[in-house]
Structures are given as structure tokens and as C-alpha cells.
Length: 165
Image (cartoon, rainbow, N blue to C red; front, side):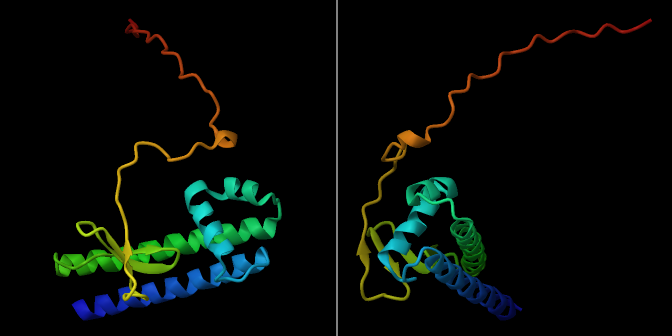
């Protein structure tokens, strides 16, 4: 039973990886870049950190094909994250010592918090040293994207209802 469930979870991960790669290729075509270019990696990061509208603003485009491609990539990324998360939850439930795998721009990685090491599963010979810090706000300000200055609603007076006789 467990191996059947794991096989199904892994198949879902493989399908989600395939859909993510296809969405990334479509986005690259929409902006006329190579799918493996640094420009696409930056676009993916912008989309994840800032969202669709801010990314379109940064690209200075209103092209609906670009917006559709970004939206498709976000949806594929969400599906991939869910598939990986489901598989990892299952594996952790089966073995609490399992080293959880995460996903970033379509690539699976492990994170060793104590050692401060991030390792992509597709490149295990090149771990990346990271310093983890807790941020209390974004490390940058986006002046053009400040939210509206909305005053909180004023409290309304509650009226007591009198019973009718």
C-alpha cells in the first residue's frame, strides 16, 4: 500500500515538473529569451516575490501573451509545490528523520539549517552555503507599489433591540 501511494505521489511530481518546464519554456518564448537564461530566472524570481502586476510593470509591457505566460508559470509552480509537498509529507510521516525536499524555480533542494547548506538534488556536488536570518519586513521598499492609504472603518454604534409587545 505504501509503495503504491508513494509511486502515485512521485508520478504527480513528475507530471508537475513536466508542466512547470513547459510553462517556463512558454514564458521564455513570450519574452523572446532562452528558457535557461538568467533573464528568465530573474523574471521567475520577480513573479514570485512581487506578483504579476509588478512584474509586468518592471517589464514595461501590457502584452496579454506575457501576462498569460506568467500566470501559467505561477499556476504550474503552485501545482509543483503542492505535489512536492504532498510527497514530502508522506515521506516524513513514514520516516520522521527524512530530510525534507523543497522546490525553487522547478528545482528540488534540501536545506540543512544547522550547517547552513542548500543542496540542489540535480547538483549534489555543489552545495551552496547560506546564512539564514529572520526578516521583519522586506529588505527593500517598492515606492511605486505602496498600498492605498485607507483609514480603518469607524466603529458603529450598536442599538439594543426592544422586544415588541
